[in-house]
Image 1 (cartoon, chains in turn orange, cyan):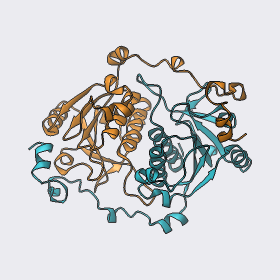
Image 2 (cartoon, one colour):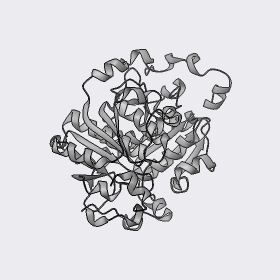
Image 3 (cartoon, helix red, strand yellow):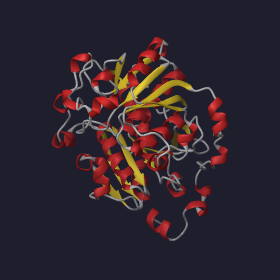
Image 4 (cartoon, chains in turn yellow, red):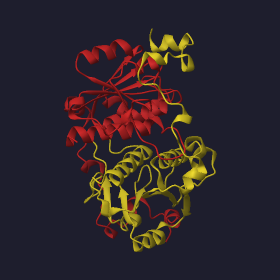
Length: 199
Length: 199
């Protein structure tokens, strides 16, 4: 029976035959996820994500959801990026707007300067002269602040000029860029992998 | 000057001072991206992406864009997932619906059985009993078909039962899942990293 006809015949969802596979899907309650109170006090990966001049609130919400899953320290909202609560953000954050710590800094420069003085390495996610492969981060680069910029224009030069380095996701096709929320997900989970595995 | 007031005063875009940073952004023409004709004949990473019962056409388009960037062989559209051309797909694919090869198989089972006979390893992206960390793939697992499933229900058991293994992206927060297009991006770029680096 095809997937389509199976759906139509009403055999989807809980009526599916889980005994057909060794790969039984886990219920939410079996995943041992944290409640919001536990998440607040739980030790995070030493990564901050700055959303600078992000136009789409759906992208903002999606990055909140990813930041929750990646277990990072905090989101920093800067420039004209919208802040929660907004229904468009909430729609894609699916609750992560309440679990992920965030701060709003309309002007990111003083915060970046302060973070650098405190030993945080600041990296932009961009394609520039001198950018490095996004996997080329070492344990000495943490704590780390990853900056993502506008969907069309990328990170503005005033912010790029404060970066200690630029991480680039290599692209092998015809397009010039990835969706910003997808790119942030790829980079954040690679950073988490490096934090946990050391290489 | 804050990012916001800078934007308002009209100093954004091409008028930004690129001499403020060593990290000059590359123009599209400097990125040496492939044209569609070159992309068609270019050697791809030995990865197929199956989109099974994906509800959102925006997610479908976003995964086309990611598949172009990751340089994978082909997208397989199955179940009730919509196929291009649709304006919602085109809006997020941004042209990748024309550069990425794709096939439509309403019933994915015969295709999966045929691929397995030809030596393709079939992996679902899911959280199940017996799932393995998404980075635990070896060079012997390629060519590889990665399956992503419905945004709410995940991959149906009829398809899961055909998988050689399940890849799981670990999650450290309060939510039970990532957005499917973000998850596909994280997994695809990890597979590409393994193909190119061997570990």
